[in-house]
Image (tube, rainbow, N blue to C red; front, side, top):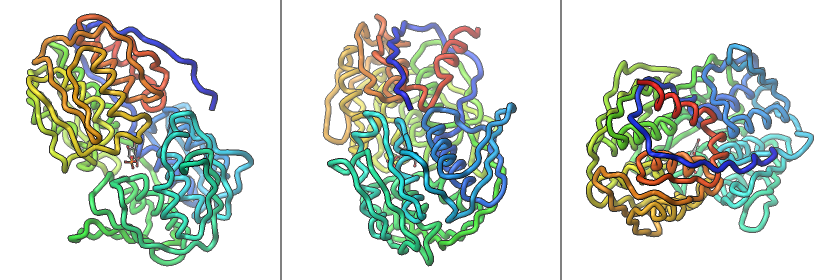
Length: 443
Ligand code: S3P
């Protein structure tokens, strides 16, 4: 994937945000929908797929390993899968762009197939640790050659038959969990993953939907997932709910821009993903759920969000995994709250698309917000609802969520905030700025 040219953007203080909007399909669910459909025998249909660069990287990888994926003019994707065990040798390296989820999940898939695949990515992805997936997958018999520090570029030599493993996750990571489960799909016997702390459960839900024999047991040690390998997946009709991680930006934007009143439609509210909304409510945000329903086996609702005076909070550590991608935008909410918000226990933020603790500390400080940095989080003293100073250039560090978070901060800053590069937003939310313009224009 050719790197997109840098796109700096100056953000000005905004009038009230008004109107209804739809967020794009859930990124985690979209990746899994493409991968599992590619392993089912027959034609699956996927509605509401996120067409961001990360998910398109997964689509391209599945194509280069033999699956047929087509986007219809109606926006519905049709996928003709090869069956578990049916992946073919790709002709060239798999370009994962910026996407950690594509990389780690596909490493798992390749590990138990007769495939040798090389994974490459952009500068951000090439700095991220892959040892967390290489460790368990090596135990299946697959072999790995990686750049120093277990980074990309990295080659996986899959093995057939792979050995089923039992693995206790040392970090709370849905990507590692899913990589092991995906390796287990084409492995004889039972692959077991023990998850001491629950993380997003989309892989489990969707694998069962595709007909895999996967049991989930809640014990004192945590959740135990047992997957029977050599699975036969049946093609599915999938409807992807809206991404709560994308809705998060608008929930905070409407909370901090005076006079705002918006409805975010079709937001996935799986409990393993919805932690931010809980914390925002603890802070006094005005978020009402409307028309709660189920879409594609996931709980969904429309969220009406109105401007509110926010108060500082201590972020409850048990919510960390269910809001791991939302810390950057939570830090923005904290910058406008009354008092000192403390968010700790989130050291995983150091190894996301950027070091999100350092990136947000630097960006908010540049905008005049008092920030204290810890190894595992930040403490932020908010403005009590007043505009923050702004008037600075901040660095998005090839990280879509930093770019969107600082855009939102700029909407309620006294002087314009310049984000040095908003091009990474296209990885997860290509229509973000169009939606912002619509919310600013509708009255
Ligand atoms: C994801 C899991 C999380 C999250 C990422 C998507 C997934 O990563 O940060 O954006 O789809 O499984 P970790 O597993 O590294 O926590």
